[in-house]
Amino acid sequence: MKRETNSPRVPVTIEIVLGDVPLRSREAAKVLAMSPDTLRDWRYSKPLVGPPFIRIGRSVRYRLVDLLEYLDKRTVRPERSAPFYRRTRIEELGLKHPGLCEFVEEELRRRVSQPRIVAAVQERWGERISTQRLSNFYIARVWPKICNEQRSQVLSRQARGVLTSMDPPSWTI
Image (cartoon, one colour):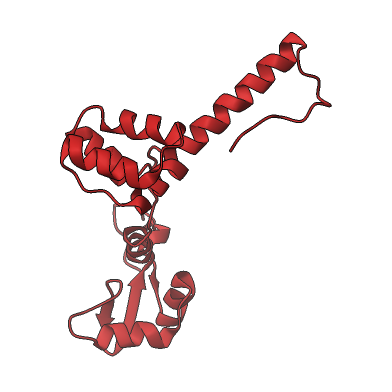
């Protein structure tokens, strides 16, 4: 005999969110693109390494949300910043001693010998610099300026019609 109740039957619905579904080690390893053995090793390591896991008796489960969070924490995102600019040693000294950079640049443009420039900097500012540092400064800062100036001179002469494209550029580098 069936017992009847006054209340109508209401179907019970459980909303399962995809992230809450427990995954087995094999499935979790596929999500992480790793070996299941690696996950097992992480679970047994002290201190614990790897994503959080759920132990139910002897079985182990991973939540998809935890796996995705684990991956997100370990994702390296490059910073969006200005291009890297490293000062040369002479530029650093120029911050300390105003006029030093301009002096060194002018002397290098005039083709003064590097030992003379080193001696002049030592005498005027009391700083020791090497000829290698002068070469680095010339290559990194002075030479590109000279090339750009000469290039713009050639382009302006071409625009005025003084120099045709057949004439060789007179760049002195």
